Amino acid sequence: MIKTIKANEHYKNEMDWLSTYHHFSFADYYNPEKMNFGPLRVFNDDTIQPGTGFDFHQHRDMEIITYLIEGELEHKDNQGNHGVIYPGEVQRMTAGSGILHSEYNHSSEKPLRLLQMWVFANKKGLQPSWEQKKFSKEERINKLVPVVTSEKATVDNALRIHQDASFYLSSLTVGGEVEHKLNSERKAYLFVIDGEIKLNGNIMQTRDAAMIEKESLMAIKAEKASEIILIDLPERYAINN
Image 1 (cartoon, helix red, strand yellow):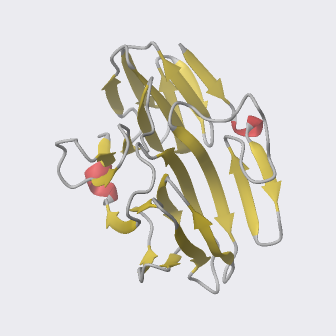
Image 2: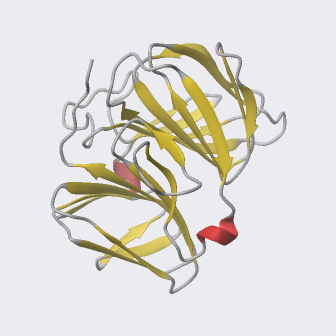
């Protein structure tokens, strides 16, 4: 079963410094039918204007994944971490028992676009931590590259989170194809960052998303040069104290 959510069906909020699309209930947006998809609790598509951003604020018990599409993002937190993320880089933050952090557009001239995704951690009160890693466009061409995986996974070079979930990135050339298998206890969330693809015959364009359940195989073909992110999720999950 594939449920496609078109770009104009996401909640959109425009401010002078921020343009954001919320796929699930977040901040002032509340929709009881859009609370989460498995352990995926937040999927925000943000464009932040130069020299602006989110001042220090707190998170708890979430695994927060940020993917930078365009621009430069500066991160600071009360654990002493400080870094700038550039296009193609992925950041992983375990909020755990509590972390204060800020996120700002590092450029005074150009806007930035990022995806921020929150996944419920599988345990409460974890030690907060942060890291980032670059994944080149060349290594993603016509491949689904795992960039974030479970702490128990055997995949090399990926960031690790405390949840049975995996994040994949792919840059598809025109006509490029990738496949992803799902067993009966898994589901997936697919987002077209840019371009146009066919997912098992369903046309998806820029900013379209899809909830995939009870599909043993996902066949993805690019109708135009495209960039996608795929999140493989458990059907059932637990949060331990």
